[in-house]
Image (cartoon, rainbow, N blue to C red; front, side, top):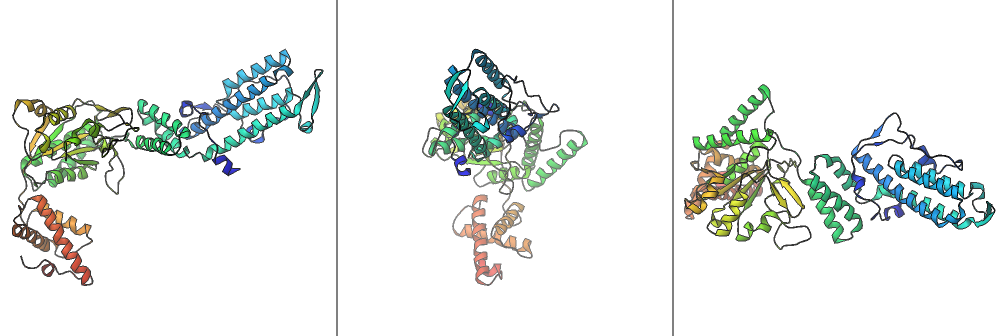
Length: 529
């Protein structure tokens, strides 16, 4: 029986009403649904609304989902029961027909609060109307109001209808879509109304689709449910705690950028303050688009990534590599029925909303950070300039997503743009300059004493499972060796090249340690400088 339940199809049975969050009365008793149809219902009993039990209501979203499903299933079978009565309508008297009409009117009004209880009452009354009793269940002929009638077909149809309803009711728990629907119901109140409609439409289509299209609807619902619904507050909302949090935040940022110029420390302290206050707002203040420019390898991208990590916010890094990356399709995405080769259907503009804080913290937030890297190579074209002007507008509070079929809120998202050059003074760039806040990022001195490089050495060693005593002494040695290697290869010792050279040195040390049973000899591994 259980396997049969799993194979039941429920397409076309349910509508959006199963996702209604309106509380419904708890049936006075659910025992009747478990006992089956009543055995002795008076022929002309009056069916009335089943009263709530002690004014209790079903309010839990998941319980409402299953109650609404049972209600719609009960309604569907109530209609089938009514059709069955119409089939044998000529066997009923005028009074019987009138009374049966009253029964079904009452059933429609009360089916939401007690679908199966009412269905069984109706079923029991129909049995009585046609004179079918348990002890006469298999009789072939009965006499009613002077008419001869064949009970066999009526009884068979009634019994088949009841069994079918019972099986479908039990089969609801095996629906493949059930976990998705339950997750949606728990989150529904925090989801935008227009997105709710799209999700519910996909959930209903999931039952009707098969194969590729079924998986496509499932993927869409998962993506829609992955959209963050909350903003991460960077400080507490009020009182002395708020001031204390702000002080700690600014102090932490200044320490993070301690090896950089005072202007850079001041700039990022201001950015942290603005982002902290914005995280407490209702999204009414304007976003600031920050354009950070400086020499290649100066640490712009790494510093912003570390800044996001310090704040505990997700950061999505996107590098402009071609003109196609600045196309409308690449930025905004496509609808889920359209496939564009090499393009993400979500679009890269909203990808920060799907980015986790870290591999250890999978939480997503609406105040995520978008880091657009190395955009200067594309700025010379008219098309690229037009795209940048449009999407760098602080007034743009949302974007119409073709994939989700609704607007996606961008009010809390922070955008950083890095470039090797400042925005030109040419009048055609005036509108772009007015929409962004520029900051010249001056590199920190890359000496063997640089705290930035020491931190990177430590990070590289951790990723390669290396640890050693006298780290400060040996980190300077590794940095000097990396610099000497770059000089020997006639390469500029900028931050990016230094990172690569340090990684190569650490790998050499790791391989020698593996060959020597875990013994580390840095000077021997790296050789003379």
